[in-house]
Amino acid sequence: MASKASFLGLIAVIVVVALLAEAPTSAKAAVACDIMQLLPCAQAILSDKVKPSDDCCTKLILQGSCLCQYKKKYPSYANSDGAKRVVKACKLNVSC
Image (cartoon, rainbow, N blue to C red; front, top):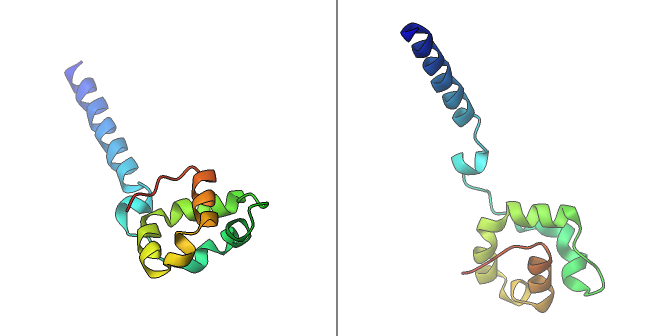
């Protein structure tokens, strides 16, 4: 019975190691900051009548770790009412 428990324990360890090896890349590598990735958000930022698309929100979330950098490099756009509205609509919390 002890050998069966040891075998199951070994299997559990192998499964955990395999799952960790397949962890999302965000935990392994930094996101490449590329403001061009946010082009799907342009219309929503420029017009208060356009809601951000799912693609916009997805890109915004993926580029989330870059948003403070964008605020420094492009303050007139990143701090605009439109940008703030889109960030809020996509349910992101940005604190720099």
